[in-house]
Amino acid sequence: MKIALIAMSGIRVCDAELLRLGLTLPGFVERSKTIASLPSLGLLTLAGMTPDEHGVRYIEMPEFTSSTNIPLDLDLAAISSYSAQIGEAYALARTYREHGIPVVIGGPHVTALPEEAAESADAVVIGEGEACWTEVLADCAAGRLRRFYGSRESSFDLARAPMPAFELLDPSQYNRITVQTSRGCPHHCEFCGSSVMLTGSYKQKPAAKVLAEIDRILTIWEHPFLEFADDNTFVDRRYWKELLRALTERRVHWFAETDLSVSMDDELLDLMRQSGCAQVLIGIESPSEERLRGLELRSDWKRRQWPRYREAIRKIQDHGITVNGCFVLGLDGDDAAAFDPVFSFAEETELYEVQVTILTAFPGTPLYARLKREGRIIEDGRWDKCTLFDVNFMPAAMSPEALAEGFKKLVVKLYGDEFTNWRRSAFVRRLRAQAQAKGKEAIHHEN
Image (cartoon, rainbow, N blue to C red):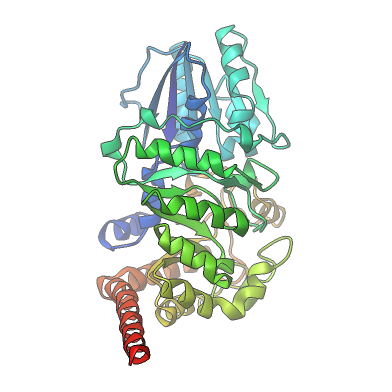
């Protein structure tokens, strides 16, 4: 069969003024643009496990309209998308079906709403695609595609993970390449719509497989910048210390998402820096301890770490690793006074990067279920507002308009040239001061 694996993950913002700000302020939506420009590791993984008898092409489609040129010489179109762009994904699926081309669709959104997705596609993959991909291919080849494959309860063993088909990518088009070492997260944040939507448990890929993927990337990219596509990278520190020692020999630079627990382990921080870690993204969520209460549905871990927030950020950055601190606005309890403390916290801690988003009720999350029960979802079904930058719910302590306006004012303060340059230069100044202090101490000991 001729198969197209189509990734749809373009940037979406409904608020026209916010979209304009994103085009003029350095740093704003920068992380989202980075994510949108990353190749779809999920689709590349499916390509890697597709039998050689089939022909596979990988396509990125940032947007789809009636005038978009699409390949039609196909026997199967496989589409992956997110909530904000799911309307376009469904339109693309219907277009392929009108041409008599079978369509299978997957991803977090359709896992949450498989019946909705089945109205536009021939088949819907629920949960992890690897668990049923070969079955989908066999059924399609035989002309007997089922409506649904997989489930959220089934779990794919990452020890069986295939090598992603990195060779399908044009090396000149990507400045970051993704590698996954784990799925899931021990924290269970109410709003999280990431890989926890696809799998019910935390699991780790064998280190040998991770290193093999990196070695494969190194045969294609001379100096790759890796992004570890994990929800929480350093959960198993023993695993990572062994992996980082091996990674040091590869001479790459990399980025990861983690929690503040990395600051508690000097050996881990040293190995991270030695092996090429440039930045970690950390979900700080709020500078207010009270706002963190109940954010996680299991242990309130982040609230218990709140007294260490400032010390932990400084310690990580003092190791030469920049921190991208992420904040969520619109948490229950946030009112019109919630915005200035975010700016003050970023200034006080000298965060190298700051990411602010609006609390978003993604379908399938505990947050969405709770807000729907409480009658607080605005225009239920407007998935195009699941952008992280638009308001799709009624806040508890202010109006939707106050949340949107306060967010925009915070964005202007955070991402203006002056403050952005100050934050980044503060990191460099601090490292230089440390180096000078170490140099003086060394001279003192010699004398």
